[in-house]
Length: 75
Image (cartoon, rainbow, N blue to C red; front, side, top):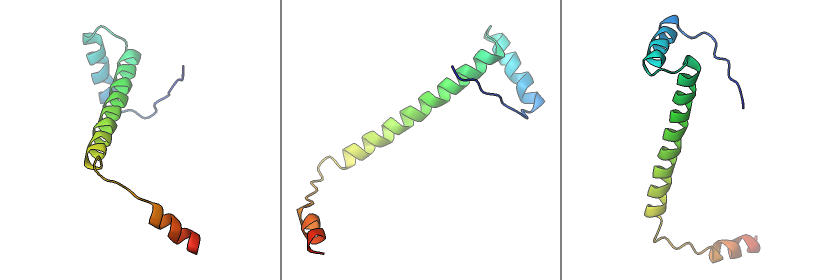
């Protein structure tokens, strides 16, 4: 597994994250892992929603490339 070193975090942020982690009975490291995993999951869900919208909006589009291919060949 990869490791990440995060530099120059504001002390107040670290202190607050420690409090949050302690309240959840997990380590600060685990808190960061959970936050990163949640962010990736949310990004993947956003991508899936956009992809579904694009698929839906182009579902009935018929693309005939024959004319474009012929035009390219004639050049």
